[in-house]
Image 1 (cartoon, rainbow, N blue to C red):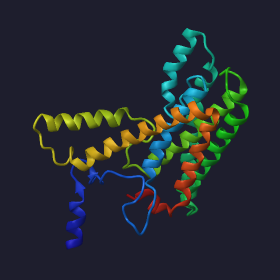
Image 2 (image 1 turned 180 degrees about the vertical axis):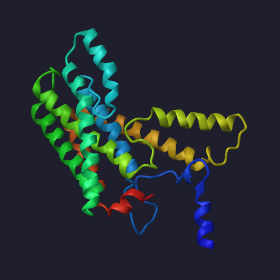
Image 3 (image 1 turned 120 degrees about the vertical axis):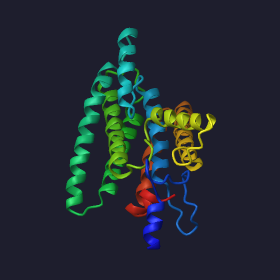
Length: 258
């Protein structure tokens, strides 16, 4: 009976499972210093998108719909990179579709789907980094080296988006902060207006959102600094981040470590 009551208490009528405490990159449990997968992916999302934008003539590799805006700017300004921006969305969609099908097949075969998808992302990030370091800098965004590098990174980030939706559905988005910032401001507005809203605007939930935005911003800042100092070598860090997430802990602990 107590077990059932405890489980009921862990659910909110509007939000499903009660919001977890604000995550940190490492576990607070001294017996299991595991990475927090959503935090690592969020940092990686900001990092890869910023590095790609700087190196590849304004290409968004994670926030691919943003390429509609930069494509318009490219056409008006007469700069390069239009081809990669046109290819980004269909390539992204194709990889997400393939990842969804592959995950279904892996689950039927009782294979570790999350680790395999992260492994595929790691391989694509390694390929993107190798291409960027070997073939960059990219003065012409429409040349094949820039397009190949950009599409490798787009495919990698497509897998990250698929991992979020398929394996971390309760986590906040890791590659786009607009919705998170909007929700955070709405929760704050409820509290300012005097609505206690203990469920929807709980301190833990607000802290979780704020930490996610800060983590993404730190990834963006780190990429900008790394590109300023090291050029294309900035792309060497994302494979390390994904390898860190991949090899520290089993699938369940990677998803739920706090």
